[in-house]
Image 1: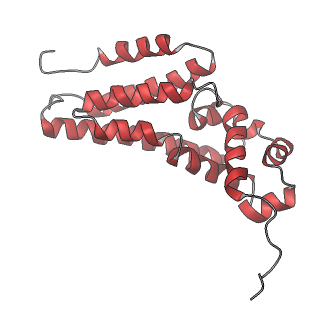
Image 2 (image 1 turned 180 degrees about the vertical axis):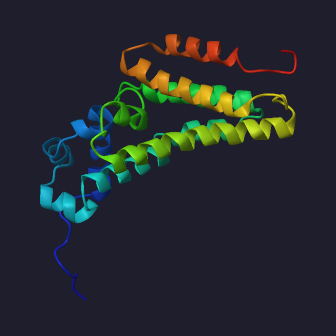
Length: 200
């Protein structure tokens, strides 16, 4: 039985990874169609045929980032024995990603928004939703910590989740600006000192 239609002349997964790196480096607005197609090694009609639109490509690139680059940090958060250990491990895992010399610095989701997308309300809303999802992960882990007894029941979990989300975003920007891993680790330890424990 023959194939229907014309076979795709490129590897979709490889092309999507290349697009992810362009968005990661240049942000949504800075990732022009010329840059995207050049990096992906395809023409605009193939991009539209496979991914629907630039916005559709961006959404899929963000999903890829979360399921690959972001996966170790999320596992670190969930698998640590206590909430604070999980948060520290998650932030440290992100530092490894943010400062990896073999990929763009910082966080794709944080920096894609910082670099622009204000002209596209749907993209802005999508990125905001993804950032809020990270805050929710912190909140859930802290809630588990309260249930387990390693986070005080009197702690303001919403404020703590917002604090650690802000720290994570700041680490991404600091990494983009060239801060070393040692400097970023110091920021994490300073932030952890503000976390309430049974004795303070």
